Length: 190
Image 1 (cartoon, rainbow, N blue to C red):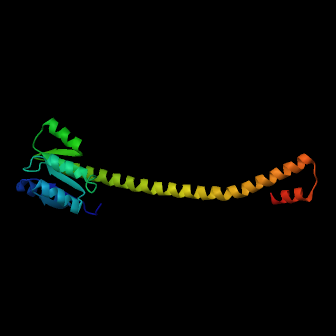
Image 2 (spheres, rainbow, N blue to C red; image 1 turned 30 degrees about the horizontal axis):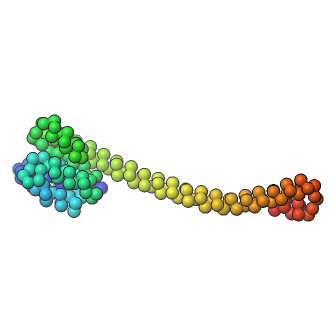
Protein backbone atom coordinates (compact mmCIF):
# COMPACT_ATOMS: atom_id res chain seq x y z
CA UNK A 1 0.00 0.00 0.00
CA UNK A 2 1.15 3.53 -0.75
CA UNK A 3 1.98 6.15 1.87
CA UNK A 4 -1.04 8.12 0.71
CA UNK A 5 -3.92 5.81 -0.30
CA UNK A 6 -5.30 6.11 -3.83
CA UNK A 7 -9.07 5.98 -4.15
CA UNK A 8 -10.79 5.35 -7.46
CA UNK A 9 -14.25 6.92 -7.59
CA UNK A 10 -16.58 5.73 -10.34
CA UNK A 11 -19.85 7.60 -10.94
CA UNK A 12 -21.61 8.62 -14.15
CA UNK A 13 -22.58 12.03 -12.70
CA UNK A 14 -19.76 14.54 -12.71
CA UNK A 15 -21.40 16.49 -9.87
CA UNK A 16 -21.16 13.39 -7.64
CA UNK A 17 -17.53 12.92 -8.65
CA UNK A 18 -16.76 16.52 -7.80
CA UNK A 19 -18.32 16.25 -4.33
CA UNK A 20 -16.58 12.94 -3.59
CA UNK A 21 -13.30 14.19 -5.03
CA UNK A 22 -13.29 17.34 -2.88
CA UNK A 23 -14.12 15.36 0.26
CA UNK A 24 -11.37 12.81 -0.35
CA UNK A 25 -8.70 15.35 -1.29
CA UNK A 26 -9.50 17.37 1.86
CA UNK A 27 -9.13 14.16 3.88
CA UNK A 28 -5.64 13.64 2.42
CA UNK A 29 -6.27 10.91 -0.15
CA UNK A 30 -5.06 10.71 -3.72
CA UNK A 31 -7.96 10.23 -6.10
CA UNK A 32 -8.80 9.13 -9.60
CA UNK A 33 -12.25 9.99 -10.92
CA UNK A 34 -13.95 8.01 -13.70
CA UNK A 35 -17.40 8.56 -15.27
CA UNK A 36 -17.62 5.28 -17.18
CA UNK A 37 -17.88 1.75 -15.74
CA UNK A 38 -16.09 0.02 -18.61
CA UNK A 39 -13.23 2.51 -18.49
CA UNK A 40 -13.06 2.08 -14.69
CA UNK A 41 -12.22 -1.61 -15.13
CA UNK A 42 -9.20 -0.91 -17.35
CA UNK A 43 -8.04 2.04 -15.23
CA UNK A 44 -8.30 0.01 -12.01
CA UNK A 45 -6.08 -2.68 -13.52
CA UNK A 46 -3.47 -0.05 -14.43
CA UNK A 47 -3.38 2.09 -11.28
CA UNK A 48 -4.38 -0.59 -8.73
CA UNK A 49 -6.15 1.74 -6.31
CA UNK A 50 -6.27 0.98 -2.61
CA UNK A 51 -10.07 1.20 -2.56
CA UNK A 52 -12.86 1.79 -5.09
CA UNK A 53 -16.02 3.81 -4.53
CA UNK A 54 -18.43 2.55 -7.18
CA UNK A 55 -21.82 3.88 -8.22
CA UNK A 56 -24.36 1.12 -8.80
CA UNK A 57 -26.54 2.77 -11.44
CA UNK A 58 -24.62 3.78 -14.55
CA UNK A 59 -25.41 3.54 -18.25
CA UNK A 60 -23.84 0.77 -20.33
CA UNK A 61 -21.84 -1.02 -17.63
CA UNK A 62 -23.46 -0.77 -14.20
CA UNK A 63 -21.69 -1.08 -10.85
CA UNK A 64 -22.62 -4.76 -10.48
CA UNK A 65 -20.90 -5.64 -13.74
CA UNK A 66 -17.85 -3.52 -12.91
CA UNK A 67 -17.58 -5.21 -9.51
CA UNK A 68 -17.96 -8.68 -11.02
CA UNK A 69 -15.22 -8.06 -13.59
CA UNK A 70 -12.85 -6.55 -11.04
CA UNK A 71 -13.32 -9.50 -8.69
CA UNK A 72 -12.65 -11.95 -11.56
CA UNK A 73 -9.26 -10.39 -12.27
CA UNK A 74 -6.27 -11.53 -10.23
CA UNK A 75 -4.89 -8.00 -10.41
CA UNK A 76 -7.91 -6.33 -8.82
CA UNK A 77 -9.77 -9.00 -6.86
CA UNK A 78 -8.33 -7.92 -3.49
CA UNK A 79 -9.21 -4.24 -3.90
CA UNK A 80 -12.07 -3.33 -1.54
CA UNK A 81 -15.14 -2.00 -3.34
CA UNK A 82 -17.68 0.21 -1.61
CA UNK A 83 -20.91 0.73 -3.52
CA UNK A 84 -22.41 4.19 -3.75
CA UNK A 85 -26.15 3.96 -4.20
CA UNK A 86 -29.29 5.99 -3.82
CA UNK A 87 -31.28 2.74 -3.74
CA UNK A 88 -32.12 1.33 -0.35
CA UNK A 89 -33.33 -1.92 -1.88
CA UNK A 90 -32.01 -4.80 0.24
CA UNK A 91 -31.83 -7.14 -2.78
CA UNK A 92 -29.39 -4.79 -4.54
CA UNK A 93 -27.28 -4.40 -1.41
CA UNK A 94 -27.12 -8.18 -0.91
CA UNK A 95 -26.30 -8.70 -4.60
CA UNK A 96 -23.41 -6.24 -4.23
CA UNK A 97 -22.04 -8.17 -1.25
CA UNK A 98 -22.41 -11.46 -3.14
CA UNK A 99 -20.38 -10.00 -6.00
CA UNK A 100 -17.58 -9.05 -3.60
CA UNK A 101 -18.30 -5.52 -2.39
CA UNK A 102 -17.20 -4.90 1.19
CA UNK A 103 -19.64 -2.12 2.06
CA UNK A 104 -22.12 0.37 0.68
CA UNK A 105 -22.88 4.05 1.23
CA UNK A 106 -26.32 5.49 0.59
CA UNK A 107 -26.32 8.76 -1.38
CA UNK A 108 -26.41 11.53 -0.46
CA UNK A 109 -23.61 10.41 1.80
CA UNK A 110 -22.72 11.77 5.20
CA UNK A 111 -19.13 13.05 5.05
CA UNK A 112 -18.00 11.66 8.41
CA UNK A 113 -19.63 8.28 7.79
CA UNK A 114 -18.08 8.05 4.33
CA UNK A 115 -14.61 8.86 5.62
CA UNK A 116 -15.01 6.46 8.56
CA UNK A 117 -16.03 3.61 6.25
CA UNK A 118 -13.15 4.31 3.87
CA UNK A 119 -10.66 4.47 6.74
CA UNK A 120 -11.97 1.21 8.21
CA UNK A 121 -11.69 -0.68 4.91
CA UNK A 122 -8.24 0.71 4.19
CA UNK A 123 -7.10 -0.46 7.64
CA UNK A 124 -8.68 -3.88 7.08
CA UNK A 125 -6.92 -4.19 3.73
CA UNK A 126 -3.59 -3.18 5.25
CA UNK A 127 -4.09 -5.70 8.08
CA UNK A 128 -4.87 -8.42 5.55
CA UNK A 129 -1.72 -7.57 3.58
CA UNK A 130 0.36 -7.77 6.77
CA UNK A 131 -1.16 -11.16 7.63
CA UNK A 132 -0.45 -12.49 4.13
CA UNK A 133 3.14 -11.19 4.34
CA UNK A 134 3.65 -12.74 7.78
CA UNK A 135 2.12 -16.02 6.61
CA UNK A 136 4.61 -16.13 3.73
CA UNK A 137 7.53 -15.40 6.08
CA UNK A 138 6.32 -18.09 8.46
CA UNK A 139 6.01 -20.61 5.62
CA UNK A 140 9.56 -19.74 4.52
CA UNK A 141 10.80 -20.35 8.08
CA UNK A 142 8.94 -23.67 8.24
CA UNK A 143 10.44 -24.74 4.91
CA UNK A 144 13.90 -23.71 6.12
CA UNK A 145 13.43 -25.65 9.37
CA UNK A 146 12.24 -28.74 7.49
CA UNK A 147 15.26 -28.57 5.20
CA UNK A 148 17.54 -28.25 8.24
CA UNK A 149 15.93 -31.25 9.95
CA UNK A 150 16.15 -33.33 6.78
CA UNK A 151 19.86 -32.58 6.38
CA UNK A 152 20.54 -32.97 10.09
CA UNK A 153 18.70 -36.26 10.40
CA UNK A 154 20.60 -37.66 7.41
CA UNK A 155 23.90 -36.56 8.93
CA UNK A 156 22.97 -38.02 12.33
CA UNK A 157 21.79 -41.33 10.91
CA UNK A 158 25.18 -42.22 9.42
CA UNK A 159 27.03 -42.27 12.79
CA UNK A 160 24.06 -43.89 14.52
CA UNK A 161 23.97 -46.67 11.93
CA UNK A 162 27.72 -47.18 12.39
CA UNK A 163 27.27 -47.40 16.18
CA UNK A 164 24.43 -49.86 15.70
CA UNK A 165 26.61 -51.99 13.42
CA UNK A 166 29.53 -52.01 15.89
CA UNK A 167 27.15 -52.82 18.72
CA UNK A 168 25.80 -55.78 16.74
CA UNK A 169 29.38 -57.05 16.30
CA UNK A 170 30.02 -56.72 20.04
CA UNK A 171 26.84 -58.68 20.80
CA UNK A 172 27.97 -61.46 18.48
CA UNK A 173 31.38 -61.61 20.17
CA UNK A 174 29.76 -61.64 23.59
CA UNK A 175 27.42 -64.48 22.59
CA UNK A 176 30.40 -66.52 21.37
CA UNK A 177 32.28 -65.56 24.55
CA UNK A 178 35.20 -64.59 22.45
CA UNK A 179 37.70 -62.24 23.93
CA UNK A 180 39.33 -60.44 21.15
CA UNK A 181 41.11 -57.27 20.33
CA UNK A 182 38.32 -56.67 17.75
CA UNK A 183 35.85 -56.38 20.63
CA UNK A 184 38.01 -53.72 22.24
CA UNK A 185 38.38 -51.90 18.89
CA UNK A 186 34.57 -51.87 18.32
CA UNK A 187 34.06 -50.49 21.81
CA UNK A 188 36.58 -47.75 21.12
CA UNK A 189 34.91 -46.85 17.82
CA UNK A 190 31.53 -46.51 19.50
